Length: 430
Image (cartoon, rainbow, N blue to C red; front, top):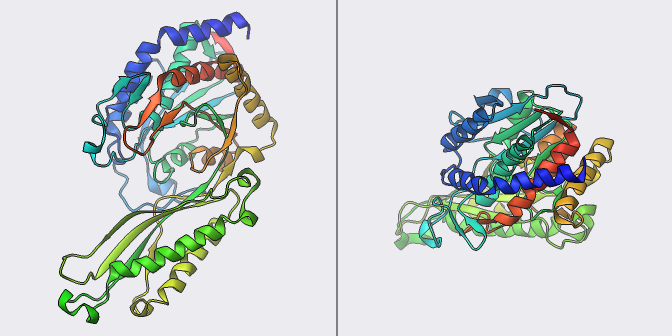
């Protein structure tokens, strides 16, 4: 690809950038929390149809994916879980294929009065677009779409097939991406523009979600000594889980990508509920936990140790010796993934192409980073023999108040993505 062509592609991104920001604002306005993604998916499907792509919109069937590696157990029905994929078919062919993946689901906004402005009324200020999901990861979804638009504006189309995926469930299971694999979507590489500050993610952690259910013995608080407080019984169990967290983070247990991090694995008690009345000793308590694991760490062994830690801690609480805690596994049951461990020619070439695209836009080398979260990259890298490049814009306060994405960063990511597509897939005239 000539320097003149690179300049034309970047200019095309700049020319359409106001339209891109408007599209992102419209997409961010959808309150697409889990179970409420359908309207946003309709919006994405309409945009793909308008661009002439083959559009596949389907409801995920758990029976088609529950037997597959990487499946995470779910507690909720899937009647409202809808994926959208738009496919560009190359005319002449001969180029390498690519998946451009992103997720449409967002996490809850929390108390909306604690935001500076309503989370689903996007606003632009000082070069940032604010709103729940703006960074994580609707800006990435939009950059995928507008990178292809930039090629089209130059009279070009990829020589390889492109699958533009808008999936659900990334924030709690990843089963949306898994359903795309089950449906037959494969490619020579995948690009996922998650918001990690224009860095290439070299490794990501696995994640396990579980609930602990406790049963107490209710009585009037006036006679509290004769009852058993299920909420207070959770405290020693949580303490024991945090001691386990410290053991797992010990230097001897860290993989190479995380050797420099003292505390890569985080345990979070994300929700707790219990009791029915202020003046009654609570008869029940449920708390939800998220725990991370290193790439290569066995899910089965991690689950077994979590269970043993809870049982051992419960044995120190007199009434829990008889009323044993129940552990329910639902949500993330995700392995870690390290692109850094993929020495295949395809991975090397894909990283090289992205490095060249990034340098062509920014003038700087591509920073590599191991992250302490998970993404859908694991499905492609672990279960589809497909190098998965996670590379997206700078965002702040994701999952927090006043989530925002830096617009100049999104512009650069869109340019880099367009150049990467042109290099990786090759181009042909429309």
